[in-house]
Picture 1 (tube, rainbow over the protein chains, first blue to last red):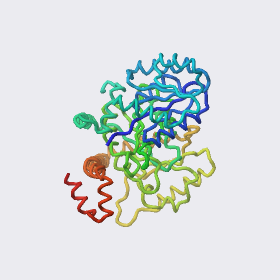
Picture 2 (tube, rainbow over the protein chains, first blue to last red):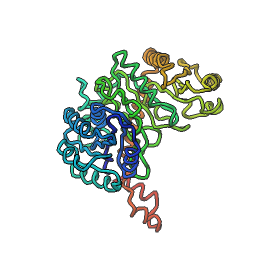
Picture 3 (spheres, helix red, strand yellow):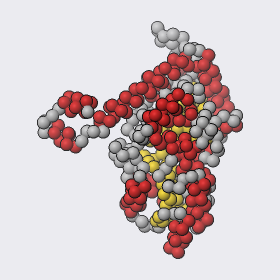
Picture 4 (cartoon, rainbow over the protein chains, first blue to last red):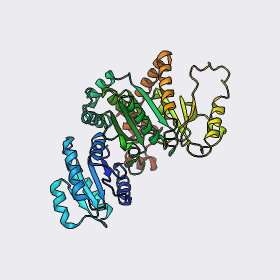
Length: 133
Length: 302
């Protein structure tokens, strides 16, 4: 039997709007993932440490405050510093289209804006992580 | 790992928990290195404050420079196989402390508040050099007592609104606590809850039972404001001293090994047999082409 994939959902920075993150957590749980949620207001160091200790396959970041260009790359850097080079990083929230290439260059593999069907995210993760395994 | 490498411990945990190829040899080494840390089980109903209280205990132990390992179990969905592991967010303040290692585990089909891989996971944290290992169960009902044969000391956490002494007199979960805690002592009703618990526990020794060498204390704590944490830590130390000075420590360790063996067999034999039940088999049973005994024997022999 295949072991469930593990995903950490994190909310970095000062933004406390976590309904989107919780919707993702719930959808992934129902799709058979083991999902760990950090809660709000986490630093990049805390998120990377949690990802390392939980040995997750992917880290999902949710941010609505506009600080994604600072925080998402900072988290990617922290993950690499901890030796987590193979962890898939994806993100969502209020992210302007023109910022997406910048984030991708920093190591964020996928960016999903408001209105993305949940199935799209589930399929994306299953596809990417199946290849990784 | 013995030098405290968290990344190595994390990968080892995954291998052991997933029963990955080659993990058995690793698990053997971890078992040899284990046996000296105090394993504290934290059990009690959902929402009693087990995770928050665990966070307080981590802080207390860290102030004393002790290394702490934490395993937090939450239920897997019987429908999707997925899980929401939501305990870690209560202890995120300890995320970057190199003296604390926290891992969330899903129950993955085990009933009883834990997961079959719990012992393997504990041994990894013992090898990492943790002095105290806190094992938080799934939020329990009245009947989940597995933690008593996994932990050295069971902390049973309840709250002021969990019912009167009649609830506390029932068999099951209420029998296994070595220390009872009425958490959320900042809420009304703490004194009555403590008195009810004490009354139920103090109803006396039943005929034929030996006088207990350890009387479980009942304490009031508030994970919210920190009340009672020092007293709770002292009680945990007291029980640990009791175990080591009396013969009970060794007796419990043997009990734990018996349970570990039981989990190993359950996982390798029973669960692996059940995982091979296919829809075809069930279809054949509906059509009365086969029966439970025939299928069962075939699955156990395979």
